[in-house]
Image 1 (cartoon, chains in turn green, cyan):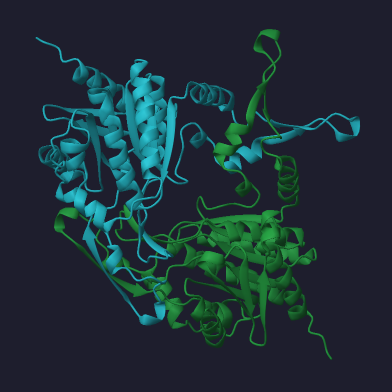
Image 2 (spheres, helix red, strand yellow):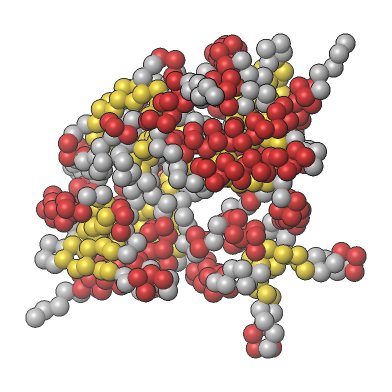
Length: 320
Length: 320
């Protein structure tokens, strides 16, 4: 039997980025998760979320990072779950998490109070003051339902290397369910890195004077993902720019280059209230009014709504 | 009246690092906090904690960062509070926080449960399952006591610029209480930065090819802190290395250069169980046994114990 061809990007991934030791195990878990939920009639989305850490030293003290709290990914996961999707949540360690991201630990701690009295012989309860956290009961209920349902599979990464290998594993794991798989690539992935072979082992000494860094280009894994790893899947990439004038051009360029289905394009300053959903044939603006923003409507609800419809049409094309 | 002389570092700070708009207001608050607690007989410690964000673009998507969860700072704050200190906690936005750092939001959410039944007409309570979070009652009690006492003043930074200006403001604010002020500089501050004048406005485009970065040296603010901003204070800096063989040398070098009181030196891999407290006259190793680590003893308790004693001697020198 012929050996499957290895793209140059696969080769680069294997050579220049250390794979996390648990990648095989996680891949099996993701494949079983996708298979089981697809058989039960669910579509499956892989959401990537958060920034990637790019070490400057092998014993890492300093690193490059990309702006991302993980809010978009965490919030989107909730809407996908509401739409009946099973969700693989591939997120940066400590980035925001579905449901819990509504409450900081300080806000939670501030809302906790004691009830009862040790002197009375009864144990003392620790309660949430629901006036201080008005949404807690609603969010907790949904959190518990989702946990019970097993529809959310969290997977963590920290560095760029971990992200790249886990994304490849996820893509291959989900390829088994064909077009029922969606990839929602919201993570803010670095475009630049320092190869392990060019990295100093120890912390760079400031006594050596000013620092010159030479960063190489990170291989564009969207290309093998679409062509080889999960060729039947419905793939959405994100494009974040700070300059609105180049946004649409960059989105179209990405679609032309990678031949995937959708780019969600947004600008740093307005990303909470405006995105453009770009496909080879269409451009759809999703906008929140000030009123809606004030009332807590989230743009992610609109994005997920738009994409789940598009995914349905992708799975079952309408003949005209 | 002669204008106070401005050190070259003060000048650089003013020119090359944008001051946060609220720095004046925060400075007044810190000065009032220090004054009031010193009058009530408390010593005051400024703890810095967490890494600093160094933007690569003025509309920042990419940045350099330093490894630091903020665990050491958050944990140390608790022991200083236990020792009767008032604490200014100058920490990176979203880094670990005193008391709350014992629980992740996911662990908290997992431990919440409903009690009661809407059908019964009583409201439904949300409780913490104390078997799942065995320390919650103890930690919450202490958290509430500290809040009640007003002995903890949190101040947030995000970027290197914010950190530098807030540290200067804090040092000047605490200088009013002389030797009763301690500076515990545990934040992982970048040694390198890109001046605003050399920074591109917009997100760096990966289509431009590999990235060359030229980073300048961050001014060593420990120097004006010790000499000008808070000359009577008790000052501790931290030295984190990955190479144990240069650790002591680097610590001694820092004491020689900046003329402050203590360097707490530690190595990345062993920092949770070993530090060396270095003064011009002494070197004291603080070590946790495996047994102690297993039982949840924290090295920060030992560090704070050592430093509060040294601070007492600093305030009231013993005549022999």
